[in-house]
Amino acid sequence: HIYGLPAKRPCRPVVGNQVFINKKWLDNLGLSMPTTFDEYLNVLKAFKEKDANGNGDPNDEIPYGKGYADPFYFFALPFGTNIGADGTYAMAIKDNAPVFLPVTDSYKQGIEAMHKAYEAGLIDPEIFTEDDSMRDSKLMSKTPVIGSAAGWTTDSTFGANADQYVPLPALKGPDGKQYVASDPQHYNYSRYEFLVTNKCKDPDALLKWIDGFYTEDASIQNYYGGFDKAVKKNSDETYEVLKPDDDSSADTFAWVNSLRDFGPKYVGEDFNSKVKYESENGDASKLAVDKDFVQYAKPAFPNVSYTQEQLQNLATLYTDISNYVDSSQADWVTKGGVDKGWDAYNKQLQSMGLDKFLEIQKDAYTKSGAK
Image (cartoon, rainbow, N blue to C red; front, side, top):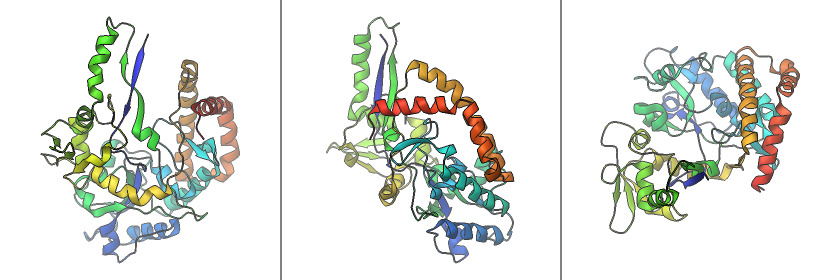
């Protein structure tokens, strides 16, 4: 036998990555916080045309740049491209049914809107080609040059510049609706965080040992770092997540000092109320912001299981499909032509096995019992 153990993480939000905007730039230019997609475009235009960062150079601002979340899906979010967690194959739920986002009307409309913004100079021209070091040099430039970008928190996205950025509201799109990226099932739960293989001589002994990881004390240290270094346990059985003892962000400090999203752990539903934060950034800010955005959360594609055969098929199918989707997306955003090329794009996806891909996803969805 092979045994796989799950995890339930502490202090997870309902809303995932989101778009942030430079509030200091808004103040410098006397602009109000945008509440609709059109207002957002007008703000980005002002960022481009004026010296928003106040350094005397009106040409060094990048209105919308690449952050730590997919730059297309989050720019197009007001059109309904509310993608779930990484690893969900760009699947989403629309009208109570699973769909592949890159063939939806929402996706196409988002492409058209982003191309117009790209043509107007509102999008970083290197957004599809820059590597991580180039991205980070812009996000964390000594003088901020990015007006807006997507990520998990301001401190994990913008580093020392975090205090200039705030979450962008859930913008009203063309249909008047507001969307956020939400996938609490994937944020909270995961499978196979510890495996006992058929080579193990004494599974019972190993499972008894690993059971110690599923206590509250072990779980919070597994997630933030050890007691006294990253977490303080109080006499009343509550916990305080401590400030980093170096100059790193709270998010980075947790990743360095713990297994963070990985590894076996479990906390009950009432556990989060026992946790306080010494720092105002990191998870503290994420959970505080979550309260304002949770009202816009919609069902995401669930945490489904696949058979071994399905996983093998997906490995081949999705590699080809996603590569084609990504290259088409970049071409359409930078060069245009989505309307003219849409039918041929869909036909090509069909020839690459999209129907088989969707058959697998719908089968896994049905068997998950999701409603």
